[in-house]
Length: 196
Image (cartoon, rainbow, N blue to C red; front, side, top):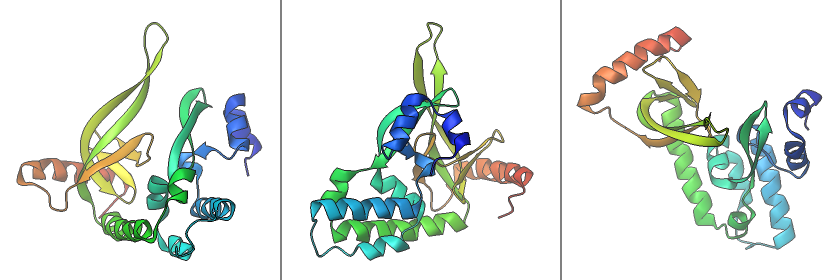
């Protein structure tokens, strides 16, 4: 349910999108995504062999990255933001093997969640040109992924969200030439009271 405070920060077209079932990436909860999948299932009569109960065990970030697709963008707090819906086409063609792959990703995700890992991130920032046109700038940065947050050498941290900071690759073992960078970022993480 959208609160009055949230309505005030969304443009009128964004409010229409929210009323049509679209949401910001981080606003989608696990329960809402599974409910939407079951709703699509009820409307389209998918393959009866699929075990939808297995979706309950998959972490929210994995479900978000697989089930959601960009639907439109609208202004939120005077900034353009992407809104997402559950990908109906993907849900209609979903098979048990897809759920199995998500469970494998979930095991990998839980391992990453509990250990700080060096990773490559794609950062998206919105810029405005001198002529007033908005464009998206994409930067590739190396940082540490820990507990759903990316930490960088500059002391900057960012939640890992599909439309702002995307995980590209994760190093299971820190390469020798990147060890000094890894240690430097670990020291900066202590300023955020993150001890791992």
